[in-house]
Image: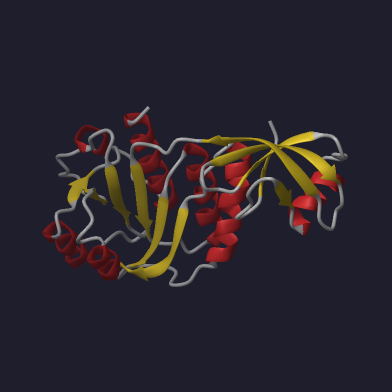
Length: 234
């Protein structure tokens, strides 16, 4: 199945932008009369037939609409961007394939990078959604301080966790997270969270957790956290 994405599209007719039109006609060599699948990233899947194959703007007629049910859990990963944008892009691609719902970039005391182009990350998410047949585009939040993130989630009912390096951790993430939940997990930079930041999070009911015996890179920790929650809710 080849999945296409067109934002805000609705029946009975879908018009592709130039990027998707070129991919449809030039790369895949689709022609008028061929059938393809399209999503608007909001949980709707459209079975379509191409009525006009044009690299500048193809037009499709919707044959069938299917509503894809939402997950009964919500994974919100909050993570400090890595110094290398490539590593963060790799992580975002992989966690999209595995499945997450919301991503927040956070600025911490030991952050290596204070800016990241979210438009480029958004494109990575869309591409990974198409590849892995995801029909809902995860939410991507722009960078903000750890304090701002915690403040904005005070009134939200969720299971809260903070993962950091500590040989005395009593809780493994897999053992304390409960299935069918609304999760928010904090992942720090390569230099980890500061003591003050850890205390601030714990004060706001974030539970300290371990992601295993190995010392993980930031992007690996983010991937592991998302994978654990998906396995918990399999």
